[in-house]
Image (cartoon, rainbow, N blue to C red; front, side, top):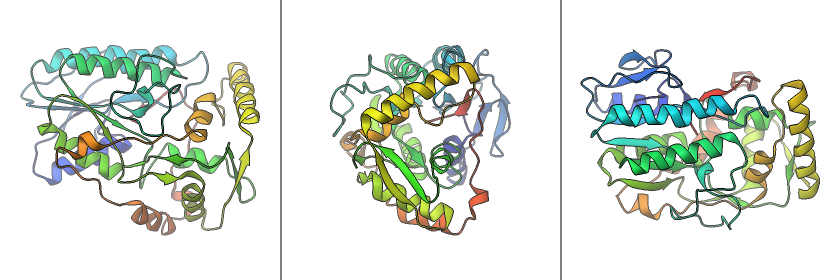
Length: 316
């Protein structure tokens, strides 16, 4: 498997190991599980000798600084995808994609796997993940599309949200909406189960959507050990601010706190229909309460920081 040293990949690798599989991890550094083989996704072909199935989670992720990181996303998420699929040959492949492949322009209140993926993407991550997703489908892979993966040790979503809290308050773009989230353990069980699924795309998410404002207030309050209030920034103002910060990032070469992609992600209803995945017998567990408990037991300084680096390697 690839991406095993990352947040999502680590959860999958540990579950495979616990279930008695011999895990071969491919990446730039050891994952602490199984046998490690060095692989640089941006440049190298992977060594799949004696491997009987592949789970692919390695990716360049995040919202890149304008004009600086797009080529790196291309090298990892598209060129690396081609090399891995070529090396895999006829082996079964489980490909962890993302709900970011879906075109943001049509209504997303209930997104099935047939929702368009061929345009409208707001950043290099969405564009390159969509191209990798198509390559994997054309190669006959099982393609999983999670949304907003969270859980203990999350180095992406929670740290960015914590950066936005000011004086016990967080401003969110637009009115409250319903959103789908995916606990990392639900993604992990889906990855392992998907080794036996028929090729094609599958949405993967928690059992039910959540209300944005209530959920983020609870998560941020638990992480900071104090109440966090939610305020609303008018959507036109949020979009204008995101464009301004995006332009400033071209000069400063620093990751902006707010981007057009982040505004779109938070401001519009976005719920995944997981009927196809559930029809295989896979069922997501209800893990939000456990996550909140884990945050309450964790002091704020144990939450991984978000650093301005370009780009991050993981999955999402």
